[in-house]
Length: 209
Ligand SMILES: C[S@@+](CC[C@H](N)C(=O)[O-])C[C@H]1O[C@@H](n2cnc3c(N)ncnc32)[C@H](O)[C@@H]1O
Image (cartoon, rainbow, N blue to C red; front, side, top):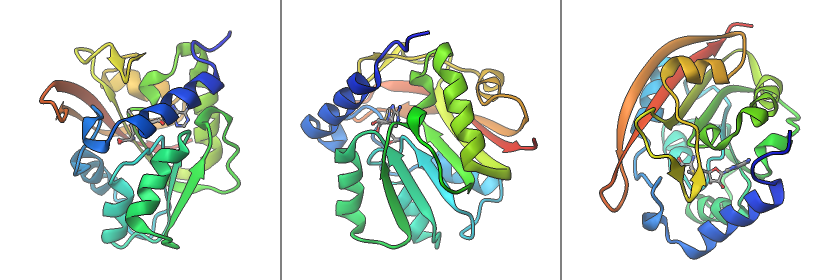
């Protein structure tokens, strides 16, 4: 059950991407995490909720959440260069914690009320899903909220040069493992900075246990 990409190769890939490619040359770049924020609203995730953005990279989600009054936002990513971009924008903000770790090896020491994942789950092979589900269950509070976005069935077959698995809403729900209830789903037609269309499937879910 060897992973398709070793953890070392995964880290090296992503560190190199963030080192060599400026923000607006990355296909996943978005100035406004519109769907993420809308689905957090749908789930009733408010400023009092602790949010963990897994594979958050250099996303502006943390900035937008802080601007909305969130006080406990954690961004986890395997590439410290991506987290350095967040730190460069936000400075030493006590409301934002930056964790450099491979998600699949992450051992949470606390729980969060909300798990957010945009374009990370879709890199995982079927063999890697149990590790993702185990971390999700250790990190999320009972009753916690999940917002996850991945390439849609008619989306690209690769992201950042790596193979991806594509998902419809039931597939995303199943990928979370048992005990999750779908609250809403959405299709997003993401436009990359070069104008290419990337259809995403989004799911908002709750852990009902
Ligand atoms: C396509 S980018 C999306 C970044 C961010 N979620 C966004 O919406 O801008 C995928 C991100 O996942 C990170 N990543 C990939 N595999 C990871 C893993 N196993 N553990 C932690 N981060 C990972 C990469 O470094 C990268 O920042």
